[in-house]
Image (cartoon, rainbow, N blue to C red):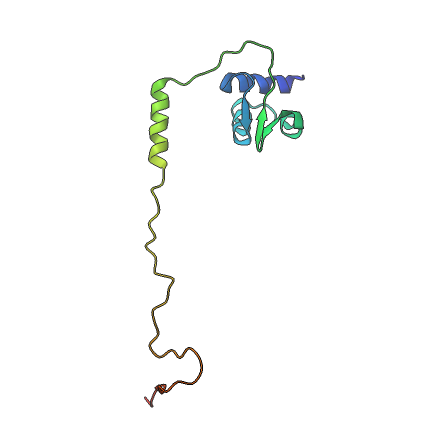
Length: 120
């Protein structure tokens, strides 16, 4: 394991714990936060895949303390997420079913004469 791989694995263990399964957005967050190189070795090898878009980070062998958010921070984050949820959309647009046209002749000959517009 080279230096860049070890740095990424330790950053993942700090944030998510040992043997974490991470997604691509989480990988992008780790790369952005720590400044380490993008782990192409993780996303390209089949041995690290845990599912569609999910990757199992190998164990570094070090004892790393996992950072856990404080309860009040988690409550604030949950409140912000709940505030951002969109309500169910109400369709207030016009109906896509047209109104009945009184002078419409559906097919064939009819006994009702069609009114022709007169001179203006």
